[in-house]
Length: 355
Ligand SMILES: Nc1ncnc2c1ncn2[C@@H]1O[C@H](COP(=O)(O)OP(=O)(O)O)[C@@H](O)[C@H]1O
Ligand SMILES: [Mg+2]
Image 1 (cartoon, protein in one colour):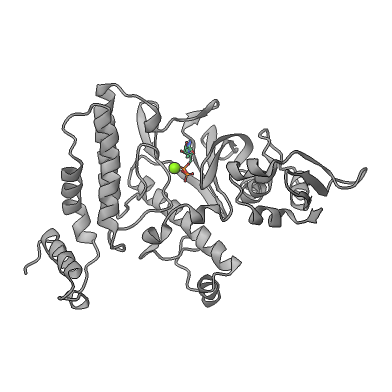
Image 2 (tube, rainbow, N blue to C red):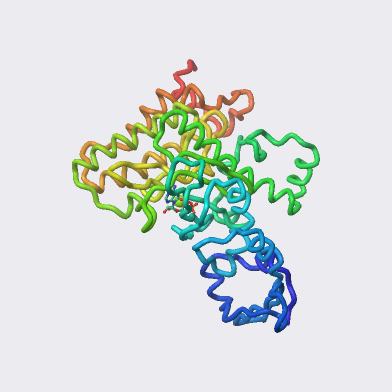
């Protein structure tokens, strides 16, 4: 029998539902009869694992218990991500899992005594996992690495850990990714965009407004068929939000009918970790055009007439994007390289510069 700690167990396997299913966890029982169940035997299809439940037990003893019964593989990271919010009374119970996404799982929680909402959504990132899932270097270009307070990381020790890609460094990059999501949501909420309000965040989790009711989360736009009239209205709302985002220097980066929720006849944009800024990322324009295109495709399919994705994206970019876009010093380009020449020509035209 292999003996591992629970953390070891999580790190070793890609803990998404599919890979967990492959592990075939059959049964879990205390390692020694009549003893406090601080160590458990997990019977799997491959090896039997002896895991350490000490973390979980501490939390159970501290009174952190809730209605939702997490699977073995998620309990540890759920506890460690949310126990601080629970202790601070942001929520009183975890009622159910709303969605197990690829990068994060979202849980329905009951709002705590000082929160003016009956329900909250807790978005809890999976450990490590998400780093493989997005080509995140495209989005990270020009973005500072942020600490837990939303400030750029300047500490030499931390920067060293990041450069060396130590476990600690990876953890810092991971939380920076989440911190960008939090910062974008805060900026957009303040600007009046239709995004969930963030209540608190930290470690691997964000607590925000919940869209839906006690039976479950709101569907994404992609799951609903709209009447022509509703589709027209919501298209205008989507364009309004895209415009507001661009004005505020935020490009979603993964916008589509999958990341727009539909609830009470209105839409809410979610899922912001990969946001880019027109002023910091050279690919910002392409990313923006792709966002606009995906949204337009959905509304076209819903029968909204006169939707021209390219025209719309160009108009918006000209009005709000260009002034913020990255300016390249032409001296850095190679006049003999056709790619550089094309690039500069496009920039010039786009920004209305003289030859
Ligand atoms: N605030 C929220 N209220 C209700 N459901 C949510 C909320 N945020 C996310 N969800 C649900 O969880 C899913 C995953 O969340 P999302 O932020 O899109 O993360 P990812 O797609 O990266 O896993 C969404 O598709 C949606 O169904
Ligand atoms: Mg999503």
